[in-house]
Image (cartoon, rainbow, N blue to C red):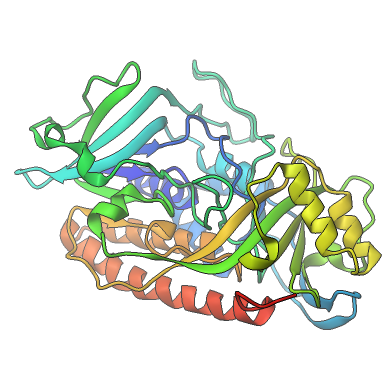
Length: 455
């Protein structure tokens, strides 16, 4: 059995690890030319479900690497007024040290790449089903590259390809155990939506054309294998793990839509070396609710072992679109928006924005997937934000994608006929994903003003 995966985000890589661990042949295609291409946020919260999924998907050495390069365990979630008056808090004192509670997205992604050959610079544009019952995928390519295989000590092993560093400043965002910071991404430019590593393309699925449906054998072929152009591959199953802009979703479920929640979020990152934080802000996720229509979230990443990235505090500012205005601005201008928004807040909070790296700020639009009628199960399916695009509230986006990966891998490896395995996966994945979206939207409503509210 040969599985094709579109998208090398967290969900797609976890699935690839699980299937490879189970002895299947896996091909992963990613639009980005390298593992570090787009700003997608910084800190991701990993909850109990995410940990269970990681244990199910990852070989022991990869799980150990992910754990060693994760952040120190946080034990607190708290909510404050703009004057730092505590409104509520919750402490989690009994989290086992073996649990991963937070990760830097880029560092985490490097861990998940361990042992995998991922074809970067390959964009899935569409697919066709072959007469023999397989699926043939059409891709557009830039000159293809393959990720090096990181060794289990966190460095890139020499395998005849240029090594990449785990110290890219473009990691991913998510809040600790609650609130803003799930799997946010910006696949389309500055005000894009929360998503995975989106293989978002500007080509309709039908543009794969007739050539993609011609008989093509079991492997990959095409005129783009040594340079830019077209490329084709064939397998028994195609998994669209290509995020909010999923080309696979557009063809498989064209009725699927995204709902803009009318909120925008600005992410930034403040170095923690020598920094002074408000009391308990270093223990987990802290949310500050302004009286002027803005909310702000803060959460630290202190790596268990050095990962080539300095420890940092993730900063976020959230407000209705009409309050934040145009966000197609340089990073320094976005930082100034954060400073202006917090000008009348407690000085210790405003300092967190002022001390942030001026080059680290970027915006996202907060969007959510909408429920759809299930499609007929077959040789193509979807995973994570490619189908149930998750708002960042609750920090559940990555965890839901990891659950999808673990469930799909278990069904594929169960020995069931593939169509039955895919149908069983979708019968759980779809309602679970959209139920989680509903919970996340309700949480947003409690945290920030409704769209259109005036400061």
